[in-house]
Image (cartoon, rainbow, N blue to C red; front, side, top):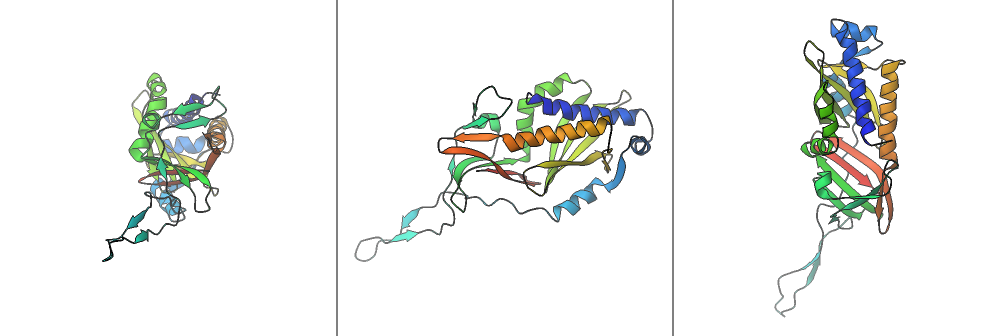
Length: 261
């Protein structure tokens, strides 16, 4: 399975949904006839989810150190230990990654990841950990770097954009309906584990619709969830001191935090 298959599945899902809408009007009626169920306004759903979103990941902001006070009259400065609840973190100049679709472990550098922060440190209970933080622009730059060429080859899809939300994200794309372009969003939310995603539904014209319980769209949505979550679950960082896997993900409107240990 290549990493591009996830994007192929996502594009297929969007194209099929839009195909349903294109065959009938209005859009709401077409979606209901295809097995979708109206869930209300997307913004209301996202606001409800934001109220129960887990707190952000706490991570050292900078290295703490022992400094020295102004010299005493005797001429000997006294040491001052800065408060430190966690072990300091240090920037990583590369990460080695292993996952099932790679023929062998690969090394990735910051210019290929576009993270705001890429650091190695320890958790509060002293476990070795990697911390990765993206802002919204970094997330979209990362996706465009790795998958943008495929999107450009898909004539019916353009302007793919990830809109980060507290506890989730909306993956938007514009799809050609022959009569014009329609914007569609796939609403993804973190589940209770904080490490996996569920597809909450599809957004069209500001309204959220649940995916049908069975059929082609349900199959595509299920496969997209399974493959994406498998990647999150099985992605392994190879550090000289051991292997690290993703244990926590936090999403907000300002960015994404990932903690692996």
